[in-house]
Amino acid sequence: MSPNDATVSKKLARSPIAARVLKLRNLTHEERDDGIVIAHSEELIVHTGALSRSGSFLHALRVVADRVGSLAELLGPPTQLAGAQPDKQLEPDYDPDPNGPLSNVEIWRLKDTTTGHSLDVSRDLRAIAERDGFSTPDGLPAIHPHHVAILCPSPGGCPATAPSPDRAPKRPFVQQPSRESTAKVTILDSGYIWTDRDTSHRNLNDRVTVVRGQWLDTKTGVWKPDEPDGLYTDPDGQLDGISGHGTFIAGLVSNLAPGTRLEVVGLRNQEVEIGPLGPRAQLRLYGTEVAIAHAMLRRCRTDVIQCGFAFPTLDDYPSLPFAAVMKELRTKRAPHDGGVAVVAPAGNEGSCRPYWPAALPDVIGVASTDPKGKERAWFSNWGKWCKCSSRGEDVYSTFVYWHGSVQGKAGAQDFDGWATWNGTSFAAPKVSAAIAAQFAEGAAASPVDAWEALKDGKGDVQISTVTDKKLCGSPVDLPYLHL
Image (cartoon, rainbow, N blue to C red; front, top):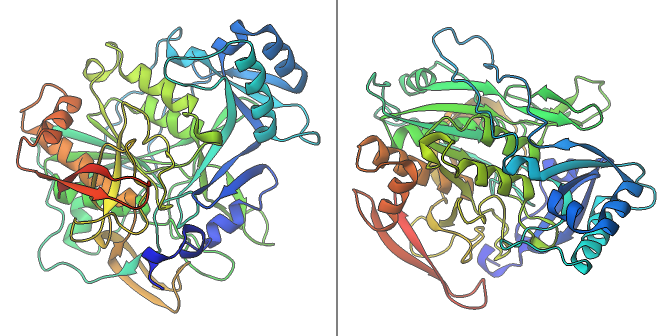
């Protein structure tokens, strides 16, 4: 049976990362064939409009949970460089309007989960708010759990498969950075792994500034730094499934948009025990929507934000943190007068179900085609909520040096700094690169305008249409960028 003929639950076997994450006691999940909603079992995200609209909602919420703070209040400490980078300058964090969109979203923490976890409590409290007439024009919920996103091969994550070793290119894949670089791409991903064994990797090192992401400990209200990406292994000595993910994307963007400089934000949130080897035997395997949205907000002094995460939400409601951040980024006080472009992958569950943040109206959600650009890739999510598609199958880019076993691959693997990989998280960076390149040429007033120009077929990028006639029950056309 080919992958295209199998059901999603059969064709995308649960990866070691997903299997570990779903067993964590502080997380809860709800599984369907088209994706798995994963969330912190004790944490809730609340729309303040419901607090003022419904006294019964506020009363019921206070009975079961304590307020941690609003997103406007809970800004982390200044971002720091990851390791010594003496030649790199770090631009200051963006500070949002304290009374703006971020103030309308709060984090609450359940007092006790023995009588119900965040999924059940969210549904119960949402029903109370809706009964009292709470609604928003953009369909935001009164409350939802604090969702988790994982970078791994299925379920609920990206990429779609494990990487495969490939040969080094005959010509430099990444050019030396130019002093006239006129566009910046900020990559929110697993981080970046330095290596200097060949010209392309050395050139990439020169292009990239790596910063540490942060995650919020809701027990204390304190933001804590993420560990840098690295060659992390499980107790069996297998390279974990997300090591090098950010390095792969950084090389891809630099190859397609040579005039750009890059900032990579490493978001390996939350420690996961992977064996009986003590505190050091931990991997940071997932990110939370608050942490990822927080990084998007704070590091928005850029031209294009390339977000590597995609996740489904409880009952498919929009993510409150991402919706608030995008609303802030579209204000005149934000960089480019609200014109920073935000790009995100559609996800890899072969589903029409909206994945976030890609499904938000102001986010450029990117689906994946097959290598020929004629059909939807077998793994790609697809739907009218996506803005476009690009090739995400058999994508080639920079990787790590590793000789040994890899999670999701049988037998020893020999990676000499190069790989081929599958996933919508490799289709999306191509679109980010095209926007950055278009903006760098000075043909558009803002990165968002550069995207509109690309979508209209202007510039050097060819645009066609790919139609999926099966997945969603009716044909869904998406613009296809030939990159």
